[in-house]
Amino acid sequence: MTEHSRRRRVDEDSRMLSAETPVVGPRWAGNNRPLPYSVCPMLAIAALAIKKTVTLFALVGPVSMIPIFLSATEGLDPAARLRFARTIGVSVTVALLVAAFLGLPLLSFLGVSLGAMQVGGGIIVLLLAIAMVLGKETSFKGSPANGGPPEHREASIVPLAVPLLAGPAAFSYVMGNSVWDSRLDLIHVVLPIILVGLSCWFSFRIACRAGREIRQATLNVVERVSGFILSAMAIEMMATGLRQLFPLLGGT
Image (tube, rainbow, N blue to C red; front, top):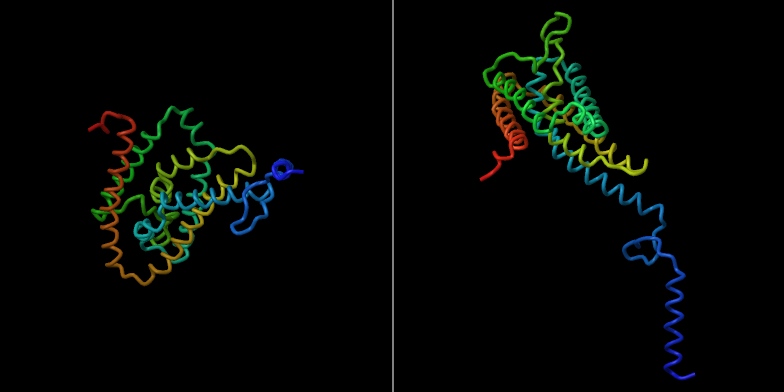
């Protein structure tokens, strides 16, 4: 056998061996062993769930809402504050889950656009922000339960849970990224929402404990500043909604 024939035979054997070896997915870094089929989808779903959790946390922004939470729970006893923090976390989770599974069909059925929701939510938030700046008592702080004293009132979950935390931006994100083909895909749809709801609860629990050390005068200043910031957020929310309803407003 000549040298040329021997090289040709080696090349044919190599091609046959590579054709018989199944490709089962990517390889671990620094390891030549291929991954099994069952591991690759889980890694992709885990990466997607982490990405969605980070994005949704940034859109919800529970940390930035802590001053408003302290203003809403001003005068409440510690147990009521902790209970309200838990209620906010549950409300945000439920609202986002409803938006993920029923948001688009419900808006289509009612004939309501996301831009209209943004304008309506912005008006509500603006009215409450003006009341906070002027120091007036609003439904934002709830009302005394069963005619009891103010320290036993129940704070309102509106607008803190909806639309400030679970607002139009978070709603549009979960509605646009809630597509799944199998039950396994539900992990990256449901898990980020649950984790963000838990982050709201934990953030406000920490704020409850820190708020005990803050004096009343400081809380009054925080309320005024929070109302001013809230009014700017309301104007931005309405402006975004108006640009969606009237595209000509977004032109230069």
